[in-house]
Image (cartoon, rainbow, N blue to C red; front, side, top):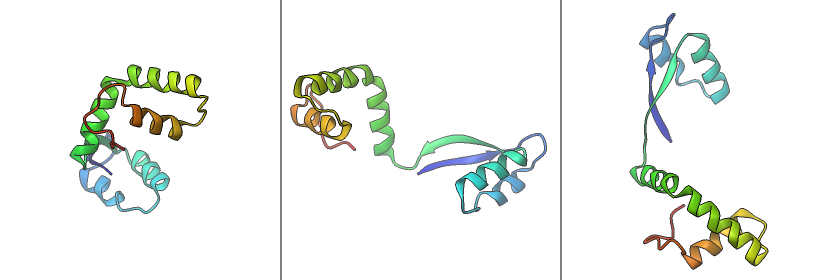
Length: 101
């Protein structure tokens, strides 16, 4: 889950923005926030583990994709979950924790 805060826009106050956050449907919520001049500003993710995983994956994405592509061709695996499982088993990048999700 992402946490953020309302940034006051040209035609809005912080209270107006925060009043709209509880709306139940994300599309309705985003539309109303935008319509009222509110901007959502990313603050942080609520899970530090997820944040660390995303930073790690981002820094090694080209290597990860290269190994997944090689596994796909080498082992004739055409679906991503199976290729990721195979890569996790082989651990070609030497990850300490291969159970990252």
